[in-house]
Length: 526
Image 1 (cartoon, rainbow, N blue to C red):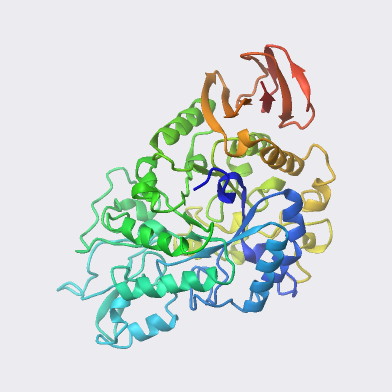
Image 2 (image 1 turned 180 degrees about the vertical axis):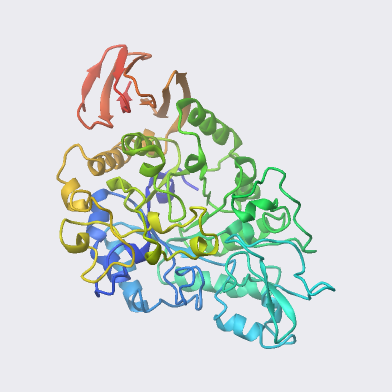
């Protein structure tokens, strides 16, 4: 791939469609709402939008239980609305990435309805069916990622079917060539409509152990933790054959110009990088979630970045993620002041950054009253704080009713500070977090060193992490103070401040020594 292909130099912005903008007063965001907010995204200067699932669905897991891969759920609009969204996004120079959910369908998908009709149905082998053990128990000990057994018994046919998530989400059998061909045709359906790529849900789950052997116990698990952690997922995910499956998807995308394949993969770095594939024949970007789980300290972040850079295959392009629809908000995890530092880090490390809607406003997790809980994970494993509703609350556009999100009752509560934490208010504040994000993205566009340049590890001095980005003769230094004390950092030579997380000292010359305030990060031109 050329060094300046759009997905290498650009910034991806994730939209959770239920929560972005409602246009029909039902309290749920829709495609027309996204279309009406394209000007905001163009103003922010992101390069691509990734939209979480919009397919027809019973919404047991809010779209991740797909009933039709080639349509749009009426909640979100019609297929013609999607086509108009693609057209208008492209007119603004924005790419559109669609969520693809190939591991499982809804139990109401016509494929599964046929599959469970009888043992000799032609689509029986499109899913994973097995006989009970002699005592009638499930075929093995696998656990659902949402808690409880991963097998459900179908009394009509006398067999169990496997579901890595909800029982309403039966797993497809990706060892069946007919399944692969059907899903490849789904990809082509959307690619032909102008989609610029896919984020593939739980891609490391697609192939299971051929013998369906029991998973071994996890000696590090203790009561009160997620049930899925009780076993090591040795046989239920990340199997060797998965890489050919990913390579086949990639070949479908390669039939089109400059389309991107992104894989959702929650694995250690040394296993994650295998998804680039042999000779980079796999995912363009196996999602790197290391920053989400990292200890938020200069030494830990420096070690993580260096390990990741070393582990990348030759020519593999890195990527970084700070938050998404499954994780607590970054400002909740590390605090709002350090969230400014996180923004600087995300947008200056080498690789493609992915933002999550609302993070540019400093969203924190919104408390959800018990009677308004929506997330099936929270309902399945109550009391563990696993619910994802707090990070999926509606986007806040203005101080108007319901923060300008909807004329009806929003499907999830808004934050208490919505009258001040909204786009309209913060875009007019020259030192707001939103302004900082916009300035950072503008600098990435202005300086190739920040988008496609090389990364040079600097070092750690106390609570300060620094590194360089280089392109041609340009050398930019990034310094971040993770500590709660002001510090002075010695520079390799004189420099000029391009941007501070305080957004208050652009174009300030610095001689040899740099004074960093509490929670401050800066970009310097050396």
